[in-house]
Amino acid sequence: MRQRSGPCTVHCYYCGWRFEVSARAQSTSCPKCNRALMVSDIVVQKLSPVSSVQTCGRVVVKRSGRVIAKNVTAQLGVEVLGVMNADVASTGPVVIGPKAQWKGRCVAPTVVVNKGAQIAGYFEITGKAPSSSEGVESPTDAADASG
Amino acid sequence: MAESDETTTVIAAEAQIKGELIFQGAASILGKVDGKITAKGNLHVAERGTCKAQIDADDVEIDGTIEGDVTATQGVQLNATAQVRGDIVAEKMITAEGATIVGHINVGPGAGKDGAKAAAAKAVEVAAATRPAMTPGGHPAEPASIK
Image 1: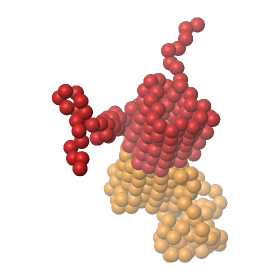
Image 2: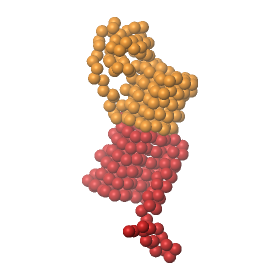
Image 3: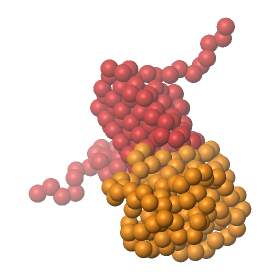
């Protein structure tokens, strides 16, 4: 699990607005669109059949984890050691482990594929993070809902 | 000292080739190729190498730029400077952080062989469609309908 120190900047995965939250925040709401956001990392260790997985942090699928979802959105990256069956959009790096099974789209700035991974899907790895033209709201008290 | 039987064909950095290239062994492309590349060994596209080509090989290592589909019966290795715009079919795949990919990826046991078979079948189809039909006497038949 990622250790944060001090306030950190997150992007709203609905509207792209950037703002700061405290290091201990697990979830918050976007000051622009007022929608609830997950800030903490999501670690999947077993079968997780959900419609969507969204977080401002990372999504980690452990060796025994299986994500079967329509879409996965992660701001800081995705690491898959187990099974990922979803369309994934990440503004951070995507790492596909040596025994991972991936099925679905992947849009990310960079990807690392280890030897032995099984992949089927459309990949759009352009080297650039999706542009965030929205401004930054710096006051932490506006955003930190639960930290 | 015993000499290695393995010889590598090198397309030099200044070379620009348009057409179909068939290598019986390993090949390294440092220049520009426009067309189709078939290699029965390892194919290496160097950092400044550019291929606008459909590539079929046993092993493909990419440091440069490829616009076209890549089919490898064994493995594909994309290094950090690699840029691929096209579909990738291979048995195994390694991708370094920094490589850019836009296209469908099909990687896993059997994928490379199936992809190679599909490519071969397609090539046979194309050849059959372009070749005139033969009569029992071995002479090319007249086209069926010339008016």
